[in-house]
Amino acid sequence: MEQCSLSGSTDEGRFAGAYQPWRAPDASGLPKLDVTGLLSDDENDRYSLPRHIQTFSGIGYQFQNGYCIHEILFDRGALVADGWWIGSGLLVGFNLIGKVNHSYDWYSSGQLKSASVICGELFAGFLGFFENGRLRSLTLHGDFFSMLPDIAGATSFFPLKKRNDLAFLRGAENMYLSGRCVDNGVIELMANSGAFDATTALTINDATLGEVAVSVLSRLTNLKTLSIESPDAAQSAIAGNIKKLRPDINTDFIPAKAYSLAGKHSTGSADLCSDSDTPSQRVPAPGSCE
Picture 1 (cartoon, rainbow, N blue to C red):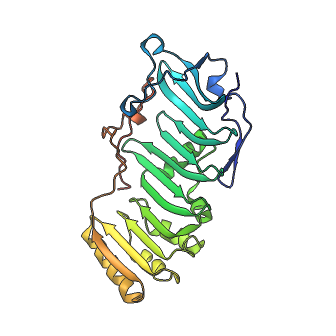
Picture 2 (picture 1 turned 135 degrees about the vertical axis):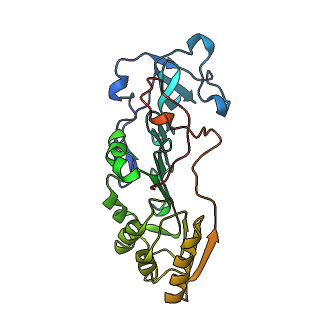
């Protein structure tokens, strides 16, 4: 039986690896099961197994036209990790469930499309990319930066290993930044490294900006449109000061609710970061840097 693999490496956001059996250290020697056609299609009952094997621990495989397209690591019937593949053996999706939820998607070209991590109300991070590798969106909440070593150590896929790696990102023409961790320091670091050089339209949502950001953003020569969205009315002064310095930039302040990554499966609980032995499949809302 041809099987899949999460073995391999990343090179500038592209995944490159062999089409081989799963080699996760904690999966060695585990039972293997063909679960093609056995999993529920109900998105609210994700990957539940039939009753007679619902306590299965091991690796499940799904096949399509003779190719392994989905590889799942189960612990007593609960999803621990899974990978999605196309016929060529290219990894196009990966999820890791535990104290921290990881989720990654790739374009069919192998370029990273999105990377997200979330740990209850403690922290969350999201990066979205266009297929040319340029950053389209960045969201950072809570205790994100102090947790980066743990995040990067969990998989080789997350594109940031330390805070200064933000300097290696190159933004798209239209960019979206969000989260209380997007502060003066983040804006300054990315601007000084050229991350905004190609950006003409920038939206900043629920961030923590001050006069340093005013100075930095007003120096972006290619910026034409700037929207600052915030539940904090004081942030309107930031937009006003940028207007004064750069009247040629179409700058708006938009009152908005605090940004949330909570999805329809959200519980608002931080249990995902507990020491429970049972993997959780919930995706709670993140907190802030405050």
